[in-house]
Length: 328
Ligand code: SF4
Ligand code: MG
Image 1 (cartoon, protein in one colour):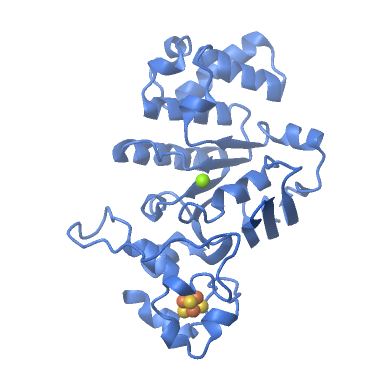
Image 2: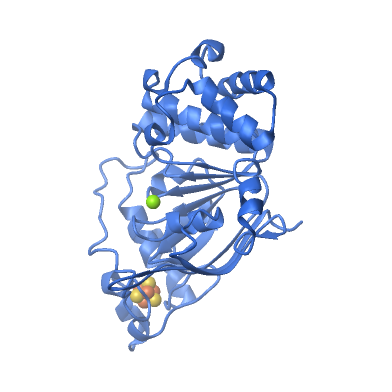
């Protein structure tokens, strides 16, 4: 079966006064039905931009975009606004980081969910009201009938994020994109929200893209991981592969900088030295080379001059070196 979402050589550029920002620079991945893919990277790695482009939510007048983003057979990059509007909300839904700015303070939670159902799925008022209560129950909000009549400020941060998930789920989408959905929440609530997303994926066969800067978050939730750096994919694999044995030097650095819930809590965290590069003028060759501790193992000038491309790991290190160092 063909993947639900197939992204090929996606490039997203924003021309600015001081140059062109290459926010996404040749990204390819596939997402199958019912799978959860985590896209991980520091802020400014292009992970959010890539997803806005997938949804057609980038500003079309100011963005140059190429490649192919195929969702169940439709190329989203060449689709009309009308086609996109139909897909968004109904078949593709997004959950943002900050529910408080995404929700209206003036309408009850039930009204907002019902409104989304009416708009995207064309239901009657009465049916939409019932549907709102159903989805509030599904996302684990106690007393959904009562809480549907309350306003966003009457909910805690975690409960508000559940409301956002309820809105996203209301039309039973095939693809859910969650951009840093737990960043503002405390650790226990983060885990609960990820459990909820995992449960939804299992129960409804929804495909999920989880965008996060936190590699620790993806361990229990995602099936596959794609690590981004400077608008490119540097490593991809199953969660097991990438978290147990990261191969790309950047993925290793990210993991070393991540507290591990399962492991040694006394282990010192090692932040990656240096700053993420400018996307206007990224370093030549491998964009990670100014921060990489392994360049001497590659030999010559390759890291500085030649851009590494590979399906799973984009690095010039020899395959046996990449593998040998997995115990680090
Ligand atoms: Fe480091 Fe070179 Fe590999 Fe880039 S290609 S990650 S600079 S070793
Ligand atoms: Mg972001």
